Length: 83
Image 1 (cartoon, rainbow, N blue to C red):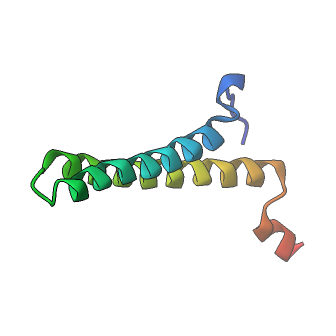
Image 2 (cartoon, rainbow, N blue to C red):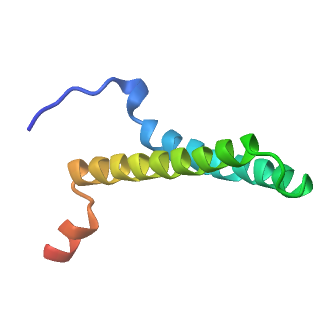
């Protein structure tokens, strides 16, 4: 199967994974703010949970893109086991 990929999107999978980890780390700050105020604030908790879920989604998409790239290059670990 032949497909065209713009060159600026070749490293997009890695960038998505990095942004996902950054969101997860950034949510820690919001949870600390919530803890500092003894659980009386709702907004930091809600935003922190959403940042974790969005971060996990970006990591999942990023790792899927990396696996797709490896598979298309023929360096997949599954291909190596069958080889």
